[in-house]
Length: 422
Image 1 (cartoon, rainbow, N blue to C red):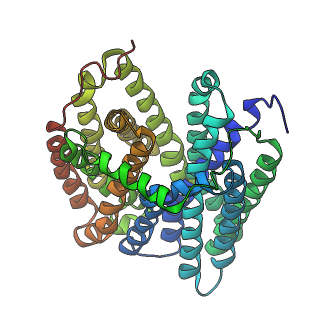
Image 2 (cartoon, rainbow, N blue to C red):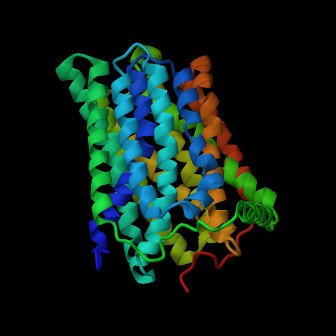
Image 3 (tube, rainbow, N blue to C red):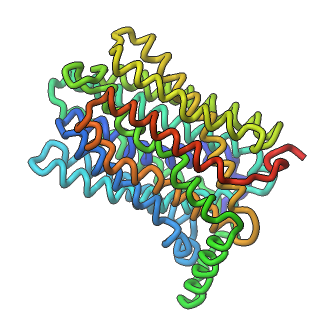
């Protein structure tokens, strides 16, 4: 048994490994399919369905506790993610690249969702309460770094390989092979370095009937909370504009000017959305957390609602002006992502607020499932809507849907003291 392993040796790499496959499934796949010539309708439909594992992961999260240790799940899922990345790389150059890559993206999505469950549980077992508090910012930072590496550096790498090899499929295949090698390295590293806390045990003697009884009790108490319908509507529709915007905005940035897009190269996209945008998102989230902890969520709720909706206007400007200046594009994306990060703080804090009480861990997992569903549903038809009405009109429709965010917010009630430092 390894004793006194420094958390710096495994917490950063664990949460980097948690963030990267999510970015690969949700964002890198978008850019790749666009470069391979798929229509916006097909891209948003197929990739939105990939949210499903994160929507339904509460259904199998009890089995992660029961079967084997969380350490075993982490190492095994990282190996599976590496295999899935290798599978994507292998199928891209082939004749059935769409069917093959989607199948491996599904495997990656389920493995990544399971890895999330195990990693978050292991974090609480592998660290005492003081270290959990100390490293909470570290884990979030490395998750964000994974986002920057995925949306930024890896997309840039694929774009540069396109220039060198003159072959789009071969370039993206090489990039995914590199990611597969990285995850095999993560698997070997964590198999060696992760501590073995005595509490990390599978509850193998728990009967199936006990599991189902606990599951139904969790559901019952979740749907018997005060203001349940207002809360459910808030969780499902607060991000409706963002659910429409998220996938189409990425396609707009790289689509050709002839189709109404900005025509950014993969390298330029990596800088704009994957680097500048993620920095804006992170800074907005940090500011949201600071002001909410100082004055409480209720005090900042409506400013956060405005922040997550009104900056979407920058896409209306970009769609009509089609600026060629990369500085202007970067500034617009930074403003929109900063506002989203600030406004998203209200959403995350409300999930915590709604989950308070008995079964709060399971209830929070259900809330995050609804969070994934809130992005999955709009994404299913966003691409078809955009292709029917064009980018400029689509972004105006997104602004109109901001009314939904204001409406669902108006019905929720929050304790004025929630979030304040005591």
